[in-house]
Image (cartoon, rainbow, N blue to C red; front, side, top):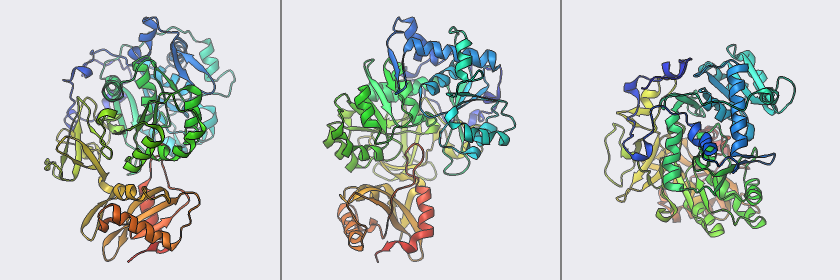
Length: 547
């Protein structure tokens, strides 16, 4: 590692031992970066230096900023952080907000000032907020005043948190007031390319959240990988999406356009009801959201002018072929599928539109390597289901966490997904490894059953999990949200079961179907199968069951 610019060395001191890191691949020319690198310089400062400061950068319902206006706001916040708040390079900066212009500016300022940014989901409660603050030893937080209640409830739980500065409420001690008095000039801290700049905490669905540590060069690597090689955006593009910036998938909405001097739209509310009017109003060209959102948006498309839209990215959960085909029919646009993760920052398997095979996640992005292995880490034959293993220019480095050796083995990242790879190098998603349902000795992938159910017109959304069964070990259990006008009667249960038997191997059909008003989801829109498994164990007796 090169000499660090961090005066506060906590982050580097708490990286896992080098022998526990995955192998980092840097031989591809797209990922060769100088030893000294502050990622905000090529993302923001560059465009000012090249005379493009007056070009559009950021749009929101409240305000629009050119590159120069964002540059000056970021610089002012950098001066607030370093002078008013006394933060040194390497200190962790806690950010709490929905997606809005101030969240973008504070995020970039933290990076430019050499801090380590820790951003969180806006829906978290006090105990969930306290965990990363304590784990990352955070002393300073910047927070949207709209989220002050839970932030204040977290303060008694976080004795190390010395200062919380709010924006959006006004007053002499607000962030806006401090920024107004600060200088618009600030030189980016001369960080090393491998200085930690981000600790992204996982959702914690499988235990305590894990802090994933990423470097300045990692922020550019995902731009030059998935975005540069698959999306291939132009400076005239305008991005929009639904994922919170506390979720690394959401970072692409900001990083990818800024890497090429394009613009983007930030929305505090970006559900299926919000995205179509935003696309129309801001003339967005590239959209990022989850498969369930694309499916829910289809009935709303006719009410809005979507003609500006030219590319759509789907990630966060598996993309059913039926959703791909329905979106293509409605818009003429092929959904670009992809799989990524917090541990590797963004997408590493995908395919550009001209190479998409519906139902497949795609092929490994150039500069990454992936293979399918068994439980002992041995590569399995083509066409055999197994665990995905990957490595590339970005990899997993947990903050002081013994689970590092579970995620990284023999130099490979093991994200916990089951795939099949075909002879042409395409990867076909099966399930999360812990979502495989073993019933009467058969391995059944819940997402495959979900995809079959979604081809029935009565099904709006669904989630499939295994429920304990004395005779079969587990039975396939489907939670179904019905389309408008449908009634969850016994006749429909049988119709759905027969439909699945006709779509895929009959032994995979759901022996239990439960009709629900809504499915549990994370703030980023992902289906929470762990919650469905808990419900299946507790509620199976109320389900419609077929012999």
